Length: 309
Image (cartoon, rainbow, N blue to C red; front, side, top):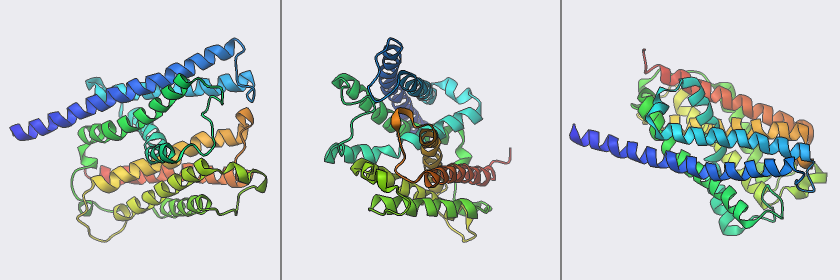
């Protein structure tokens, strides 16, 4: 009993440390974004952005990063366990889906360089702002990757404890097919495929763009792979936490990134243009959002079976 309590305390301590770390790192990103909004209100915006577009874009990221800070604190503090389940699940799902899949990308980018891209503040961004943005993304991603699984496991153990074979399966054919299609398409573009890519913007799909395509494609296929043991009728003693955690992250990745890129594709802030043909980009993002939602819904339906209450 004492050993179990000690182990639980260690995991809780790690959750608290990672949650505070995530909040602190995202606070640095939030600081930069607030400074940019205030500066833009006084007429200081990058040349390739109008003041209105720049303020709107950064005001959106202020709200997102502020939510990220609150999420990190919720993961760390006891009051986070008393928050309503729906908003906690939604914001943690979107936040983890947006940031955690970027960890391998950020590591690779550090090794091979940025592929010629500048950061989101433009080429004239001071080095301290670039540093704060990088720490914000990386720290929040790593903090969430550590704190969130512990938080979810401690709050909803029925979704993570036990074996997959103990549950009655649910059907999820359409999200599985959609995840497979998205994964194959993204990897096809990552490795140089051009079908669906607008020739006028083909050069925009640089090294960073291809690495991101590969990341999204891999996570979509992870979503497909995680759905298989949860939805097929074959008996398995696979631990439930493995497909549940992977499906949570993969579905969040598909939904979060497309929920961000679809408005960018339609509104063109700062002259942003999708490398895909417009109808292809719109269909891609709508499909990814739908697959992400239906995958998460399938996971919730399956894991609820273990919680009769």
